[in-house]
Image (cartoon, rainbow, N blue to C red; front, side, top):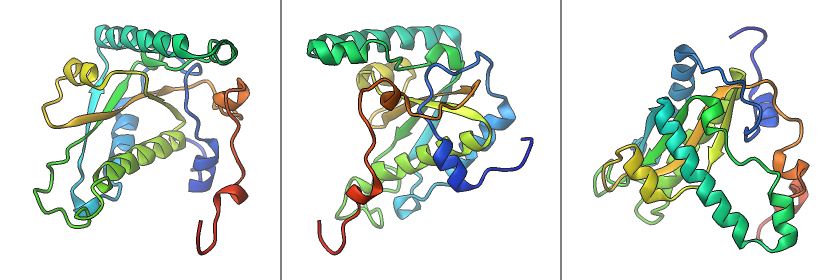
Length: 209
């Protein structure tokens, strides 16, 4: 890394779901290792570390997945009323090929055995743990000047077969990871008019909802 390190607050502020800004270069192995290590340092229920990271860089696999995602995108577009489709059509929803690297984050509910400390009454704490790993990856990538885009237009069974994930492990994210030309100041969904963010004051409640 070069230059002054980012504060965690700067990384949070700069973080974007990157689609169109990938340069086409591939993230270096050194950077990728640091980014994945940050993910692996995430807190997890019962210290189970229920995630795995499948790194995908073969062009043929990236092309195959991009074609699948494009079909899912068309299906979603076809489901929209005309005015929403007009807003959605210009929005790029993935950078699978341009990023050159996909990281599939998986969740293994069986890791830690039958009695996971902290998951007894809230089963979803396992999935929450894997999502915390994704957040760590995302913020570490920003600190490295690397972009991340979370692809969610896919069928889970398809991705499971594509990268050979054993049952009952689930893929919970495909992350496009790569160098970027810039981080947009305004998130894409706001820029394109899909949905604005809401202020913190609307999200904070005291004592009860």
